[in-house]
Image (cartoon, rainbow, N blue to C red):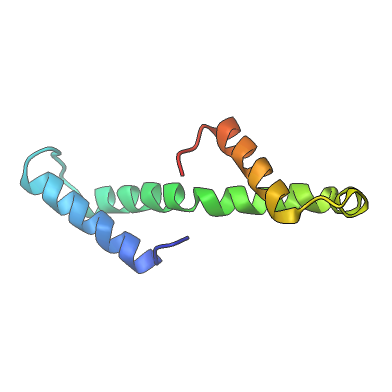
Length: 92
């Protein structure tokens, strides 16, 4: 993930604070809303990491075949990643 968890926490706090101040949201428990926003942001920002991990697992199962055919690992990584991004309808 490109951003630290502390920075994501800061972004969640600021977003909730500004939304509440401008009356876009109304709540009795700002900390609960902040926690939910933080969790959602962290989940979304770590999506690319999870996709990359899945690509590595897939390519690992085909490593022998790739070695025998002389396939380029970086090119295959990119192709498999693009397929998974399409499959999950992710925006990276």
